Image (tube, rainbow, N blue to C red; front, top):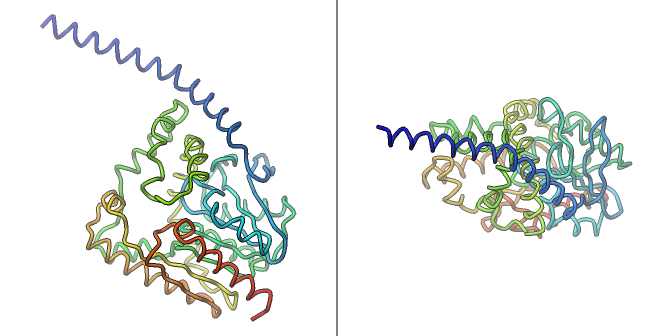
Length: 342
């Protein structure tokens, strides 16, 4: 009995020592590494003040219309478009940016929903002196964001490009097809816990596993900075995730884009096994989900009377990394359509 008592006392002391070290050393290490990250990877473009915050925007090239890129739900921010930004800037003005809290941009208080994202982008473009007409390019959750921007500021939007974009009915349709909701509660819980203690360096310890399995072709020049800023970006990303139901609900009320030229790009490469496993899905369920995804993308292409829809069997969800040539060509086609009025 005495031995057990000594063991538990020693274990308690060791646990207390580890906790104290984490509470003292962790925050110091996190602040130092954050400072080093800012020195090693300065913000490309400019940091513009919006209210009491700064948002990062990187505009290149000349010409009209101006292409504005909106990233998906991840920690890449403006780096999501590393492979297509400069090529697009060769034939027109092209702007990438990072949303509130992502990489170089300051976070904001309150809800990270679609209307808030659209208003932030509108204010930043005005502060940057960028004027429409705009061609908005949205990947994944960026698709609903650019649709909401068009709803709120439609007179500025001349065309849109949806890169494997989220559909407002996807959650309901996927759940109906599968008989359950695709989800990974364990992963979501782990990420939220990690984000809550990111000030202790916990996220930085695990940054080596972030992103690689979900976007394997992410170029190093995008992934490396995204990882070193992961401690800062993870919380805001999760806030956007929590706001997805509200964001998609906003899009359901606006699906008519008139005669604006739009391009829809859809991935049909089989979902990686690791992603299916995390979502709790079998291979057969993954194939069923892919069929629903294609139906939703076809519906998205019907939102305008001037649309094209391309399907890529050789690309995953990040088409801009797997087939940047296709994304560039689709953007150029929409730009030329606006210039020629055809």
